[in-house]
Length: 262
Ligand code: CDP
Image (cartoon, rainbow, N blue to C red):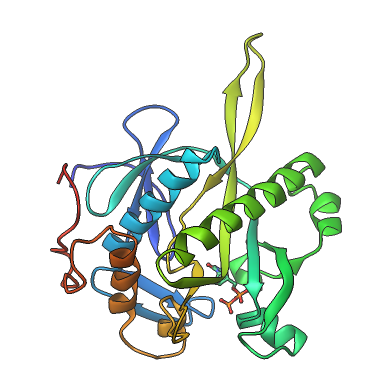
């Protein structure tokens, strides 16, 4: 690997300086963490799968007009992305009660919600990413009213699209988490404005995905809850989406992938 300046190292990804100004390289690690990094493991091939699945999802979302940070995949573990200022909020969208919502509201996991619900959590690992109200977002200036409106609108569009996309391959989208960033855009008159775009990743690390017929979990809950066969489940998601050629190509990092450039 060439010597590049590391900008940031997170739990599952590393960001490097990109080849051109305004770009970064996002590297997907095999590290898995849960419960605020109290539980850790290396899952062989997870990074390769998430790089592929996130690429696939971001490209589809671009097609329906959702602006994203994704530029192109560079290799098995890296993608070129636009550099943005990350808005310090995790935006969660839920269709079915699970995880913290099920616990907090005393709902049985698997209960269908009356409608899709969007929640905001503050990105603060040291506080366990607490749920926050829009009031907090405005009072503390984490995002403007217009940005909050845009994030909600985009999140609901992402949800509609992803529900259909996963539904088409027999998977129920229970919930997911996305993040947004501010991109500097130069206007015709030379002034600079911020555009809110989708950032980070969308993968089985950040979604709850249940098989439609059996409710089998195909996401990071397999790791959180010690259910085993984590990369096998991620591989199944990739295979169903048509990203992997065959379901048995799970022996990463030499994953056999549908590709014409690597
Ligand atoms: O996952 P957990 O039960 O801790 O929290 P949740 O609020 O029920 O998570 C809702 C959705 O957001 C799940 O699909 C999680 O995988 C995802 N999430 C995430 O990707 N990153 C976080 N820091 C928190 C939640």
